[in-house]
Structures are given as structure tokens and as C-alpha cells.
Length: 371
Length: 97
Image (cartoon, rainbow over all chains, first blue to last red; front, side, top):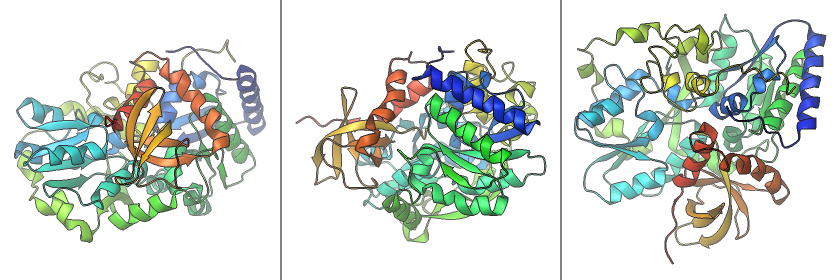
């Protein structure tokens, strides 16, 4: 764990005191949820949980796009790869377990998998070969917009898109409505909201009667966001507060939104371990069928199902962790059978997965002397 | 994966709608197709997977850079530092003049 570094330790201490005071006023346990892997990284890395009062539980929800990519979606990529199609995808996706194989397993048995950092690189890759290239495209709306940009920009004929893109606002509704959920407020991720704008959460707040605070990624941004959120919980005030105005406006990035919805439509689908999320998946619209891998290829994932799934997977509690019901340390596999080198569940795969983050930094470090 | 990284626009290529962007001395090509506002040389943008997703208002630049400057000095195994480097790598290597 890296040393706690605040640009302004005095302000950090004041915020921590303010938070302690607010929690005393509330006088009971409070759980709030953030939905962003980068928030969890910052919370764990800077030891922020040691500054949170004991009765305040800051949970990481389904904020890791890699972790919520469902098993059948990975299977689609694996089937295509085994059929000799060249797959390009983000590096985090390689070890995510499918029903039988991950993409890394397929690669080990001879499939062609290219790791890319940007959709632009996928275009370059397709231009450099006559082979069919499929971009296994994952990520939330922020990343989906970049995929949309290559879709409308006359992509090479041998390039198609297997979209596993996901849209965050609908899953917040699902988590808020779970009967076991005790989440009383949400901390929304600054950079995703850069695209959608903070206004996207207004109807959510109206329906669910819980506050949403948009926060940045600096330790101070997060602390200030949590303070604001707990204040709203105390006052029973359900509204959207934007604490990250330097990157997020109310309207968001309008040209990007226009492009996102021109290329993608929302459909319901499963998020790994969470639930069926109505409108939670982004699929290419019919106008773009010619670049849709699902239209261009017959992808039959049932060919994989003759094999028994690994039995350890049944013990994995990633779903409960992402729903905020349990913590990684509640899992009997955590840091034993399940490690970043040999992940059982998707939360241990990605750098944004709760389990991998807790594996590296530890979940609740004792830094109380700093507070 | 959703952590965008700020960089300074040093050149704009109108034909391809790409910009050469400087990230702490590393120059990369960033696509301007989805940025929210017109960008000129000298502006700072937030880069995500090789695309500018926001023009950072002048008054917010110093504040925005602070976190990244801390992260850039971190050891490479650190997740956030790795994400920042990944985002910089996501922008394609600058085309030689």
C-alpha cells in the first residue's frame, strides 16, 4: 500500500472529522455505494476506509465493466476465436472465465487474440490483415462512445464488433431495488458522467428516493463526495449533487451522447453475478448490422456446453460482492483458491475488480493514526 | 478502465481529426471525434482509450493534473498508475513528422 498522500492533509482531516460528526448525528449504520473501479482503487490505495467512521460502510457496486461481462458473452468471443477469427480486445478481458475457457485459454490452444488499448488500434489491425477481425468491445458508456466512433467512420470490411458494452444507470436501479440492499446513497463515477452528464441520474433519484453525488478520483474528491452524500442521507434529501464540475456538467458531452445512441440501442441482459438488467446492455442498431459480429457470424455457444463447468465457480460470491451484500473477505476462495494468477471469479481478474484491489491493497488498512 | 488522463494538445491534424497530445513529455495521437467542444492547440483534453472525451476548462487544469502527477511517480505495479499509463498507451504513437 502506498503512503497516504493528500494535497492538503489539513482539509482531509477536516473532512474526516466532519464525516465522523455527521455519522454521530445519524446514530446508526449507513451504507453507501460507489459504482466505479477507479474509485475503489483510490479508496484502497490511499487508505480512505481508515478515515471512514466504523458505522459507515462504503461499498463497491457493479463498477467494473470486465467483472460484469457475462459468461455467455465471453463464450461468444471464445467460440469465434476457436473458429479461427482474430479477436481484438482489452487486456483485462483475457483471463475472465467463460463456461469452459477464457480467451487466454483459447489463445494458449492456438487462437489469435490481440490485446489493444484503443478502438483506433483495432482499425489499424484490421487494415494490416485480410483476416476477419472481431473487436470484442467491453466497457461502460465512456468506452462505448469510442467504439461508436469507429463504427460510423467507415471501418475496414473485415472488421466487426462483438459488443458487450454496458450502461451504468439501469444497474443502479437494480441494486437500489434489491430486497437485501441497504444502500442509502450512490457515489457516481466522474468520468462516466463526463459523457452522460449528471442529469442522467435525476430520474433515478426521483424514482428511488436516494441521493446521488458525482465525485472525482482524488482522495480529497472522494472524501468530499462521501461527506456530501452522508449529509444528504442525514437530511433525507434525495437529489443529485455534482462535486466534480471540472469534468462533469449537467448535460454532459452532447455530441458523444448523440453518437452513442445513434450506434447503440439498449437491451436487457444479464450482468455477471448481479441479475438480469433491463436496458443494461448496449447492442449495435440494425443500421450497423454489417459491422455486427453477431449478424456476420453464426455464433453457437452451446458447442461449449458439453464440458462441465469448474466446480469452484459455484462457491464464488462475486455477485453478492458487486451487489454490496458481502465483502471479498467473506469468500472462502479469496486469496486461497482464487488469486490474480489463478482467478475463479471475474472480480479477481480485473484491476478494477473488488477482489483484486483488496488482494493488492488490503480492504480496510489501519491508518487510524493519520486521521 | 474509465479513468481518463489529461494531456496538452500540441498539434491538430484537420484531415484525420486527430491531435498530437503531450502527456508528461510523451507524445501520442488522440482522436477528436467525440470531444465535447472544439479544441485548439494549447488546450488540455481528457483522453480515454485514445479518444478525447472532454476539453478541460482552463481554470480546472492545475487541479485536474495534480492527482495524475502523484500517480505518475508511483511504482509501475500500482493499479491506478498502470491505468494512467494504459490510457497514455491507448493513444497511438505519434506519427513522425
